[in-house]
Amino acid sequence: MFPTLHSLRPSRGGDPSPARAWLVLCAMSMLQFFIAVDVTVVNIALPSIGAEFGADAHSLTWVVVGYTITGGGLLMLGGRLGDLLGRRRTLLAGTAVFGAASLLAGLAPSFTVLVLARLLQGAGEAIALPAAMATIVLMFPEGPRRSRALSVWAAVASCGLVLGFVLSGIITAHLGWRWIFLISVPFILIVLLTGVLLVERDRPVRRRSAPLDVPGALLLTACPLLFTLGVVEAGEPSTPAWIAPAALAGAVLAGLGFVRVESRSRHPLLPLEFFAHRARVGANLTTMLLSGALSTSFLLFTFYLQDRLGIGPLGAGVTMLPLAVALIACSMLVPRLLGRWGARTCVLAGLAFTAAAMGVIALVAALGAGAVAMVPAMLLIAAGMGFGLVGLQYIAVSGVTDDDAGTASGVQRAADQLGGSTGVAVCVGIGFAPTLHTGDPFLVATVLAGVGLLVGVLVAWRLPAPAAALLRDG
Image 1: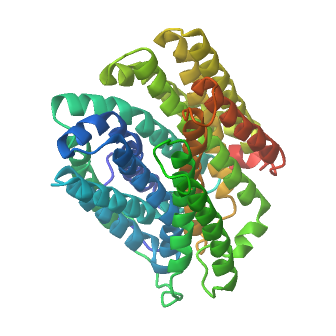
Image 2 (image 1 turned 30 degrees about the vertical axis):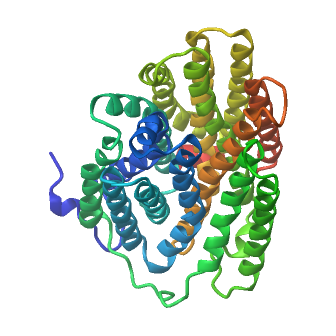
């Protein structure tokens, strides 16, 4: 018998019905999918965008970086907004901003407007995503139901990242680059409708009048943005020599300023007590290191298939389909192993799989092998994402309450996104900068990613191991 709309509507008190919880999970995963797609969907479409607006390659990088770093830097503010103003309000507001910005990007009359729209998309993501993840965490009780829900969430995000390449090639070839943004708008409307009908209304928030830590949010955004600028420009021979060191110095000052502001603020963006929870801190640090390697692998796949082998954009995207299929398989397998092995063991396995993938990428590039030779690396990356990120998400939100679920979710997501951005800046920026070294770029990039993964193993090894029985029996 199908559930009625009345039985699905949010109610006060008690756990939500399984049907409502899974419908909300589907809607939140849909939002997560299009947010993840927008990280990678522009890559293959960049030449078409540049041709229409007359933008060079240097300018086009901001279409990518503006979205990822703005989104990652403001995620902490988004998480705090959810805790202070209510998750449902924050979810609906952020989703509306993301949808409106997607529409603006698709209709952009100039390159400047497109970059502005991408910045707004990042802001919308930052507001909506922590609230969406916190909604899932609190709707599914700790144990096997939550582990399954987080596995779906992580798998959808990972598939979105991968399918972005395929969708970009198909859409750009047949509909034009503007539709890579416009196609998400009707689905965002579905997410908004689901949020209005099925997500429980926010309870009165006693701390609603507390001021937001805007300086902290701006400094947290400026730090990785300046760091990325410094690393990327260090490898550009046409850039004045003072730009890179000045940007890197600015990143250090922004980071120190963030710590100072947070230590003195009465209502900090990230309360320093957060760092007293050793498991969460270790999980988020490991997330940054793993995400940096995973994001680097995507670009290495693209560069090898298109630049080294001369495969077209659509062909390169289709070649990466085994990665998406393997991610779906991992999303079905990981929840069972999470309950059997425990979260820490899954994290260590994910790091090991990713490190093995980096070794395969370096070997294939050194031998100049064909596209099929990259498939084992893609399968290992899928395993690394499936095992590593799900286990890290579980540890990062362990023990959350109604008061700090949004903050913990925002930190975890920010660690994922900023780790990916800065990892790409370091591994790819240094690896493919001929002015910084004379080695093979793929070897240099994979070695740098491998060093980060080794540090991640050392951190993850010291993480407390949540009892597997809790994951299994709930």
